[in-house]
Length: 133
Image: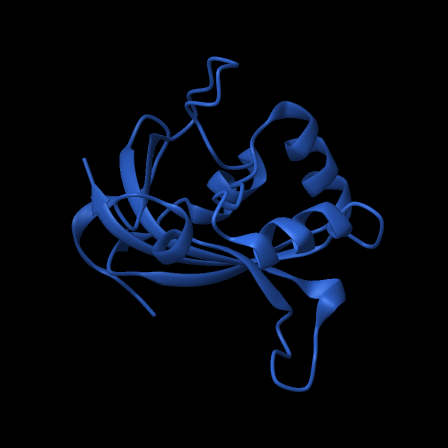
């Protein structure tokens, strides 16, 4: 879905998104895109993730893989994209600490997250841009 407005995601943009992350290798008949391991609705305090695109200080202030940021370029407020990242990008992001992690209370999400790295770790990110500055 296309978004609206003049502001678009670019390096240096401060963005907030609603996001669901699915494990492609755990697809089922009911969940053909893969089982959900992370959702901003279930796993974050404010129902969204916010960060500055292209900035990473090594402390986890940027919670997403750089390949996901690249795929988000040009998105406007209200835009929705389904972005698939291959295992190589997912393993690299995990090693850098740049993957959204399920909350402690999300036992099923944590279980899927741990199993993910024993299989093909391809992930499907469903991203809705809620704010851009």
